[in-house]
Length: 174
Image (cartoon, rainbow, N blue to C red; front, top):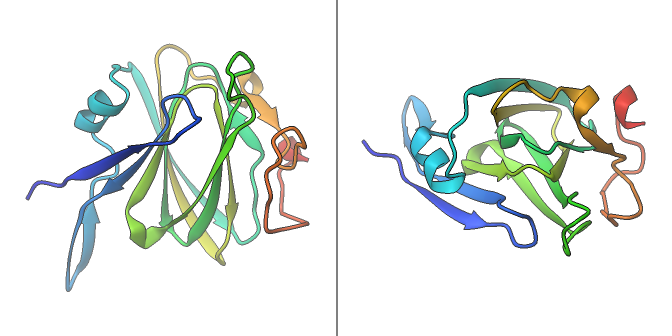
């Protein structure tokens, strides 16, 4: 069985994409491909010598700040629950600096977001339990949190409207 996917460019965000993956379901459940080398070469058109696959389990009302860096590509997928994802153009040299894109991802929609360098991402967990898959692609050494840019979730320069007033935040995002 060949899994197919549809790619849609996210306007105002340099090289970021929404990927709708096909899936197969039967009485056992379902199966889908989140990301593959074929997708990587079609979307990003670049090889990487390093990747990390991360899984986060978060509770309702957890919100991350707007994070990113200059070299890392990311693939974000919701495996359980629902999340509100916000992507922000954080390239100060871009005419679209500060523009943002919002989308709700849920486990059963088989969608992923491919996030390019200089695009910050943030997400709010909407269900009691949320499992988020996060693939990180890069060349060279990984830019951990101390080498990333971070903006507060409610930074006024971006004008993001969140459906929450008092989210659960990490110390990094306060």
